[in-house]
Image 1 (tube, rainbow, N blue to C red):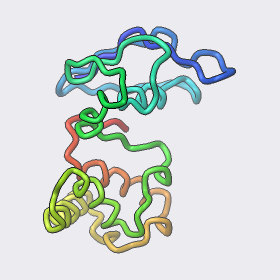
Image 2 (cartoon, one colour; image 1 turned 135 degrees about the vertical axis):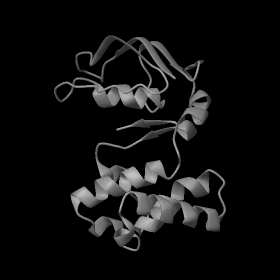
Image 3 (tube, rainbow, N blue to C red; image 1 turned 90 degrees about the vertical axis):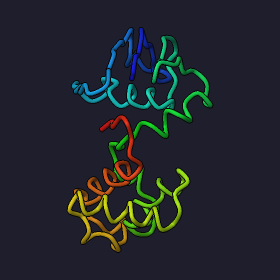
Image 4 (cartoon, rainbow, N blue to C red; image 1 turned 180 degrees about the horizontal axis):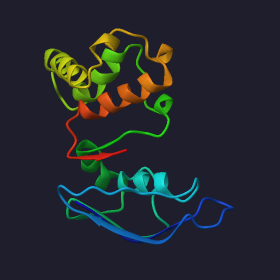
Amino acid sequence: MIELDDLHFAYPGQPPVLNGASMRLGPGERLSLTGPNGAGKSTLLRMILGLQRPTSGTVTIFDRARSREKDFHEVRRRIGLVFQDPDDQLFCPTVAEDVAFGPLNLGKSRDEALAVVEQTLMVLDLLHLRDRVTHKLSGGEKRLVTLATVLAMSPEVLLL
């Protein structure tokens, strides 16, 4: 599903955070990336979605090499990423609107999206947050809601 080969990347004026990073992840497999702050974990996840591009190396997702912006449109529909900071991901006035945003953008009708909202919040035991204002949630509640927003889109791959 995901194959990264010999990725290199450095932020301007900084030493490389990725220097030949490679990995493969197949269906049903799980992988944990560990390392200190600044080791390149988040950078690597953003490269999987094409939100950042390597200086060199190959990103292959779902058996297709991906290098241009349009190559990643399909990837972003099929892979969900829960950002490190929930405030970077929550932007609608209420929890229900945030959870419905993805399904609506994937072409679901309003009624279909509302059904997805109810089901997702129920599975995660978050129905009590449905009508809450997102910026007034606690930090832990925001993290759970960002997970709900991603799961509502039924991703094939989940990046946390």
